[in-house]
Image 1 (tube, rainbow, N blue to C red):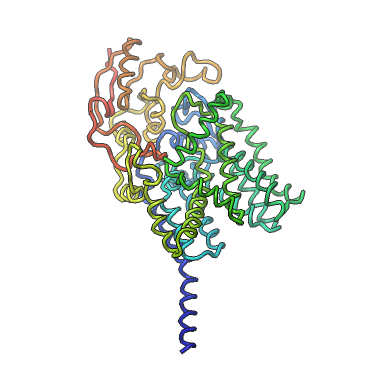
Image 2: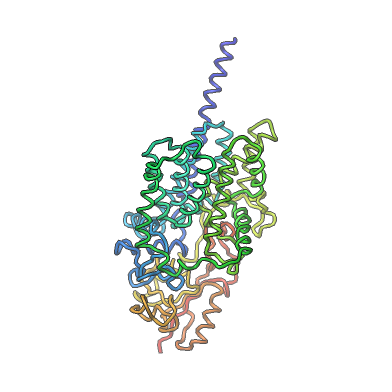
Length: 541
């Protein structure tokens, strides 16, 4: 009898050993669905289109030239241009996009694919890390829920921008930093990933190493100290990359390199607190868990949570100091600058919830339904007080992936490709909405991006690129910007335009990754007289 009981216990123990790995495998498969389903459905929005246009330039010339065909990629009056090259941001995104589009064509799916693959790689590293913890099935389940329900993670990873690579490199670097164990090859990989992180986003690189330096001085040097040869292996790739970037993609050669916000200390503190408020609103982290996390970190012998929270705090300080955001221009945090640490935020909230439920309740499995409510809805984030109300965010995202709505750029580019002749000029208002059209409907010339008179690096460009110099053939006004267009034409009074078409789709791109700006369904009950897309055509005299 006792032998049969022992046999049953042994079978149950072996079964439990397979539960956690099975949970992690299912999590990886579900994450792949959330990353790749209808990845190319929406047209690229403005930041994505800027990177994709750089990718097109790389395909044409091998470099991030500002001229793309007969158009110029002159975002915000040439903010990032020097010598007619887009030099104000690191080039990794452009080259990833160029390689993908060379293989798969110049479309939204090809542009986004390498970034989504980086997101999947990040998920793989995170799940491998959880497996190495050899935690109980409940631990794996709670982490899986925290990851899969963090819709911000998947939205950022699905963009043609630096978010996906930055999350991947941040996670790989952190993993190798804690596990390299005197293996120089792993240290070399960490150095290469650091160099690629620099080539992806300068701010993220500086903030990351600010966190790692503090962690090393307090904890890691007592566990696995670096020798001088180790530091040489680690920093050689970053030094080489830094020299290349300094020579060829130096933001201080452009206007953006001098745009550090001149806010007062009090204004910087305001921005610092906005970060926490809006990270919670965007469901990037469950804000009410931060204070319990601090309490657990201070009372627990496990230093992991202390290290994670210190890294988070230092990262937030670093981003606040390095930010070009001026609080007089907006009322929200630019939460996208926290996209690279989304894996850290997910880990912090999962570990904190596990520790809390273990202290409160004996059955550890109760952490699973609590996690589903805490991470799957915005109820505990304060959804009752948000304009969108309480929502089951993962369900809304899944429904959107199953049946995604139309977007304003796709409909507008379809109209341009069907009705506008090659080389005809179009003025788009607001100006940032020209870049998705420039990518998806490149046969038109997109006018009035630069302020006159032509000078310096822009002196040889056609006058159509300068505001109020040459009358464009068409004007496309998105939503309420039609009023501004009418005022401009009245003041300029150099050409006559007639209404050509109205595209009856809500004008705003509501599929950005920031959750406080995103809708998971189409808006149908809007005023077609003020909130549609309006196209004017110049009357030939």
